[in-house]
Amino acid sequence: MADWLTPDQWSAVLLSLKVSFWATVLSLPAGVAVAYALARHEFWGKQALNGLVHLPLILPPVVTGYLLLLTFGRRGAIGGFLEESFGLVFAFRWTGAALAAAVMAFPLMVRAIRLAIEAVDPKLEQAAATLGASPLWIFATVTLPLILPGVIAGAILAFAKAMGEFGATITFVSNIPGQTQTLPSAVYSFLQVPGGDGQALQLVLIAVAIALLALFLSEWLGRAVARRIAGS
Amino acid sequence: MSFSVRLLHRFGNFVLDVDFTAPAGVTALFGRSGSGKTSVVNAIAGLFKPEAGQISVGGRVLYDSERGASIPVHQRRLGYVFQEGRLFPHLSVQQNLGYGRWFAPGGAATRAEFERVVAMLGIEGLLERRPGSLSGGEKQRVAIGRALLASPQLLLMDEPLAALDEERKAEILPYLERLCEHSEIPIVYVSHSMAEVARLATTLVLMEDGIVTRSGPASEVLSDPESVPALGIRTAGASLRATVAAQEEDGLTRLETTAGPLFLPRVEAPVGALVSIRILAHDVILSRTRPEGLSALNILATTVTAVRLGDGPGAIVQLRAGEDLLLARITRRSAMALELTPGADCFAILKTVSVAQQNVGRTG
Image 1 (spheres, chains in turn red, orange):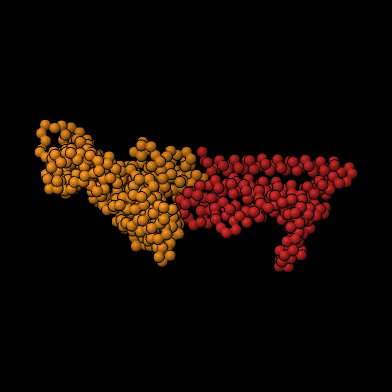
Image 2: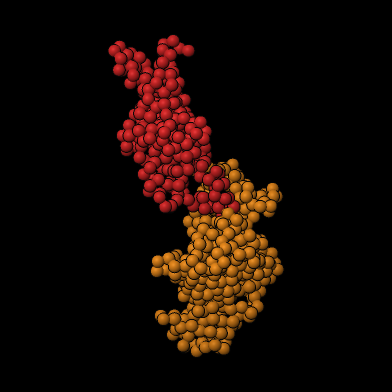
């Protein structure tokens, strides 16, 4: 491993990448489903769902983290059940960091995908139905290919947001080096000790590099998919 | 295979109340925009559920509000050609054409069928292209092919030419005619263009403000003076059946009708072919005596069967010409002066005659 980073710095970078990757991948199907429901269906409780999804965007992150601790903590209603049934623990583990990142990034992901779905002409889906495609097939063969640029944009936006998540994470899983210390938590810790700002700056540069890389990747993927769809 | 549609639905203060049965062939729904034609087609397709009604195709019930039966859109096995094509932008023309094949149960179109449809529509050269690079006319031909290749039991066409300019319409009409002639499945054709309807329809359903004002065999409805206001005074006209008798040396074609011979500029059809010719009501002049010294070639001896006096200065006269019926639009004053009443003999001078349908014998 590169010795220009200390083991603590290195583990913070790797942990952040792992947390963000799983937060994005695991919430993506739910993000598409919620975006589709909000864009295409009228149902009882739609406004409530919409509000719930967007809540982390407007609440102070510390509040979201505390609410996660209350519900997904070991004594929380859901957290207790998950630990007893599946041995799955969130509080003060990296899995909790992933959950917090996913919750915080969810509104951005849903928003990007929802916009893409709203841009798809429902008349195309009707045409597919008249040609014999069931709703599930219509989604797989017409809707999904057409919203792919939006799904990619939403996923990368969520990944970037997860990389930067701090308030909810530190509240929910604390800041334990090597276990729950993500890149932003590490930057925070280094800034708390005298002479730590050099190490903090290194991590800041890494964060900027990862963010730019994600941005370029999203642009490139989006353009490649759009080209394939337009097929000039 | 026949089909029947009965439905009742209230949209605010517009009431759609439709009931008709149509035999195989091409059934045209004709009426002004906003008369409810598209809603009827959407109800057949299952894209819209009327409050009450029953829809069946060839004995298969697609929708029955009383029994609460409604087959989902994707299981109705209908081909639907929309006004705006609605091709899938992310698929090539070939993939668009094949889309319905993935889902057609058992009766999927074969390779030979695919090639036949592609050749009939003249889209061989487009298969690798994407819809985004096609012209309006090309898109519409691909849309027709895509609907046909889903092996439908009924083909629905909602103003497939309305979004196109005159040139593109002229480009597609021959393909539609070929399709209508050879189609073994019933076709529902929605239009507000009398010219298209006269060329394609075997059955005509007239709609106005959500209700069916008249339905029946196209030749019968077109030659009924009572349906003239609905058809439009300038576009009303009847059709005569004729046989191509000879291609004359001076470039004219002699057609034989049951009322006598007619001469038309060269008709591209073999001798013996059955065609349908369209004579607009305002292209007919009436005379009580056989006219002499006229340049008009086409004069038929006829008998008045009905006269309909309109609200204005005009009158519509229905005439029996051999076994067919003709319509003439004249002034009310002339109708009085010539004493045109049912039973009166008169001669119809035809200013313009055009061929509306070829090979009517096969679909007839």
